Image (cartoon, rainbow, N blue to C red; front, top):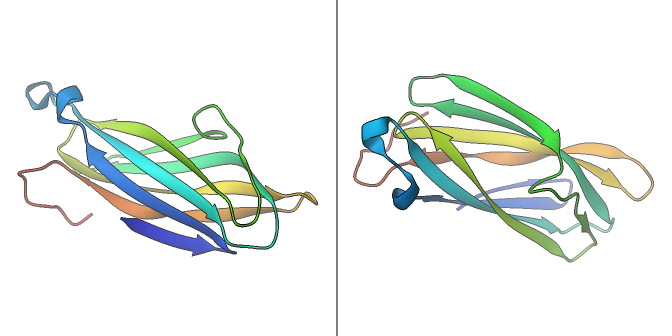
Length: 130
């Protein structure tokens, strides 16, 4: 598990290799990742957008930006958490993802919350340092 805390917002990531959806002979490796966003602060926050940086084993970088996550812009009160699962295909057997969420407080203040860098390594292969 990978974890980062920014301004009382804890982001935990658990990546999982999806062998059934992967096809190494076609240069396709797929992972799911489950993210829990826990509000340890005193303020209610709303996740407005996401930014991802995805780097494969050859150093190719893709950036992804968009509103919310999995079609939602969740409101997370103090002491609560929001969890979702999404996925990432790569054309190499390993990679790394990192990013940030744009959060907004009830009074309209916006701030970035770090998503920790996490490794995408297929089983049976030596993990690669990215």
